[in-house]
Every structure is written in C-alpha cells, then in structure tokens.
Length: 170
Image (tube, rainbow, N blue to C red; front, side, top):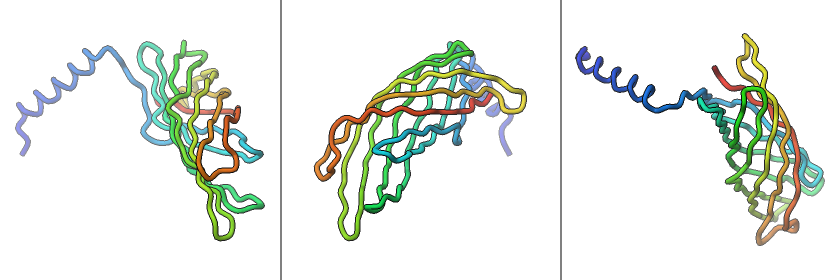
C-alpha cells in the first residue's frame, strides 16, 4: 500500500518544480513530422521528433535519417541526426539546424564505400492551429552537407533545400 503522505509530498514537489521552472513545454515523444530534400538526384526523407515549444516561444525538434536508396549502381544507406532550434511568435517559425552528423554507405556487388557528413542550415515556416490536430507547422529549409571520408567518390560541400512539416501537441 502506498503511504498517502509520501504520495502527497511527491505530488507537491512535482507541482512546485513545474511552477518554478518558468517554462511550460509542449512536446511529443513520437514522430512529430518529416522533412525531405534531394541530394545527388536522390530524394531523402527524415523524421522530426520531440517537437517542443517552450513558454517563451523557443522551438526545438530532433531530426533523424535512416534510409536506403536503390540506385543503378547499388544500394546507398544514409543515417544521420541533428537538432532544429529556433523561435516562434505562434504564427511563424525561424531557426537554425545544427549538430548534424551522419554516415553514408554505398554498396555495389561485393564492395562498399563509406563516408561521413556534417551539416548546418536554417529553417522557416508558418503555424496553424486546428481543434482536431492541434498546433501544426510547415515550411522550408536550406543548408549544406559536408561530405568527408576516406572512401567516398563524392567529397566536399553539397547545398540542400527541402520542405518540412510537424505537429506540436497541445
């Protein structure tokens, strides 16, 4: 049996932490949205998760890519992560994309080439609200992927641009 005094004290501490933190956060632990862009003529799609809007309008989303693309030369597997941070006035968004890191593995027949990439960028968009879906955002982004490595035939900086959509739970 749970001690009611312990439960009451725990709830009181939790409530105080929320009120004293100064930030009310709207978040999602599951897939919040997606983004797409084209690199070397191939469409790449990633997920946006953990979309949050803090009380002051600061925004953060986590990006991830885990996609295999079939080409005429073989299969290319891309994985990566990054952070989208920015601001909203609850009508428009703008921000930066940072901490982007990932790998590319291209395999043909019995051989594979591996490479790494980092990236940066910026994103903008608009927010709408509906009673059925809550706060939703969509817009565009642009940036640069810097490929390095080792075994890749495609090294150097590559500009990218694409679209994004995300839901922010209310």
